[in-house]
Figure 1 (cartoon, helix red, strand yellow):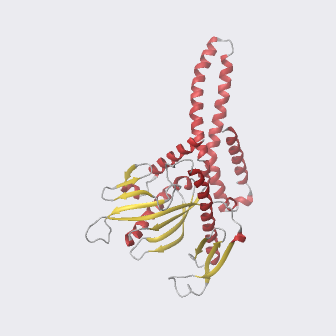
Figure 2 (cartoon, one colour):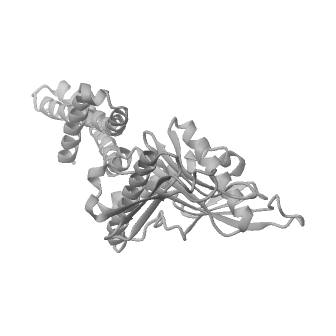
Figure 3 (cartoon, helix red, strand yellow):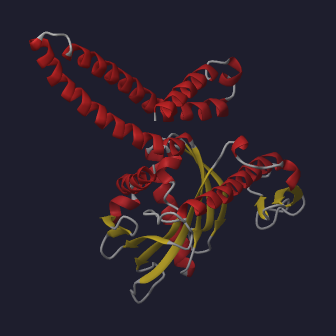
Length: 352
């Protein structure tokens, strides 16, 4: 633990130095990325400073016990008990922070929401889920950028892709991937019958370029005309970008903007995220062989939560807890996220 903490202190110093460089200060994206990483490890740095201070106090008090003065030795003994209790509490806290440090260092995610089973109602439900997440993200002060959207005829979205950036974004949204099931009477239902519909959510950590094993020579890039509605220029101007990563077979198409350059930037960003997800899943699969995850695999086919409108209740099936639906859909989802983080932290600590 000591070695890991010293490495983090060293990293904090390096990040502080980087953020003072004029070239970095001129690059808004780099400043944001480095600031998020620095903020993520600052609590650990402060905890390590406290830890070192308590160790010094412990050594000093142990020496005082050997001073030969009975009164001083007795006082030192009493104070030493409290210092050792504080050390034990702080050590537990540091261990929890350490096992989650990597999660906090990722400050950008791609959130995909897709209508599942249920026809028009599923698309409306996907739109409701999106609104829930955007309200939550706004309450955290995160930046939300729409990357792609497929609008449904009766409202909502067949699919939507958002890039969300901010401190703690991956640490908090990491466990939201999966199937979100709703039980309610759809607005399109004349008989007042309760229907069950679903929307799938996938949260992809957006990695640094250097973190992904991606050789640009392995990627085939095609520039084509965009398809679908959007005016007479849609099928004439070549602005759509189609990327194919040949080793993995992953394909990405982006035609969200009229700018070929912007579409290319978004397409490469999405390709890196999907490739990172694939590489991470392979590592996680090996880890999953040794234990059954309390949180779940994050698979899109896995039902993680049920939203029951009749009971005004949301049930999270992984931690088996119920929450007020009205409050939840308003974006107040932190309480269940904290439970999921706590459960995963316990799993990670058990592996140490």
